[in-house]
Length: 65
Image (cartoon, rainbow, N blue to C red; front, side, top):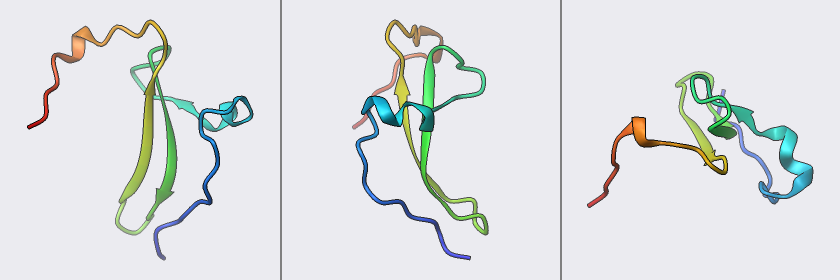
């Protein structure tokens, strides 16, 4: 089976709210939305968003080169 795909839509529009799901262990802080998934390899493309007021201090600092 090949990786699934999805047609573009506004992920932040109010009518898209039900597509976002809480991230296990981060309930009330962050949500995810899976855009595509390959069940054979486990490869996926996912969006993550942090909710207003989320305290991410316990995750430590993140930097990129």
